[in-house]
Length: 291
Ligand code: FE2
Image 1: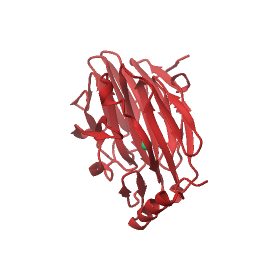
Image 2: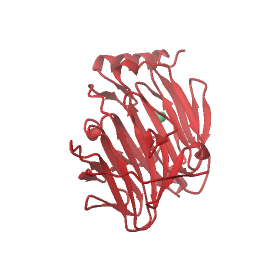
Image 3: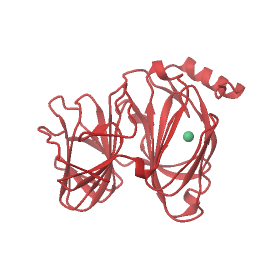
């Protein structure tokens, strides 16, 4: 069942600071990805470290998948719009994410996992977001949850928006996952033609949208398909207003910045160089994934 809610009212909407096109990269064993949130934006979009968008119906772009690799110090959130991907990790978790499903993994002190397509043709489309952990939680025990599409909370507004709440809360609907420290909000918003969606956002939270179908307008700025718009942190603004002239789909992501040093070496994200050296040593010696 889908909940019907009254649209929230934003009094003073955030504007767009800039549009980002992303960079096409090859990752894993040869998977073609649009890296939308790159290393250069980690400070600006703290607590988010990376956003990859993938979408292809050519098996050669995704079939090689992501064979086993380690992570430490943050969380990975995979959201599959279309396709099937199997996850296996060193903490003993295994799951299949399929159309519309979410996989939330806290790497914490260490996980080695593989993410492999379980399809040989057809469309594979989705996102992987990396959410940083506060220093005090970087060495926490790994955690993992698969959330099938049917279990992701959702609602419809009178303004023509259908929204899946992956994390945080929107219009009184609590999302599938909550995180106290960074208060991440992760919404998948589908807009009918001429629909408007308003979302309240704390002014200090860093926020962005990525449009994956159609085109929307945020504060008179066009945001076309495959573009990310970084929303301004305006102390006077209480949210964002998104208008679609045509049917459109986007993800809206926001969170409380950590304001801590970010030290990254590939799949390890810590606070200092020394901690990165320890992560590499722990990985080489097998301690990274030891219980
Ligand atoms: Fe991974």
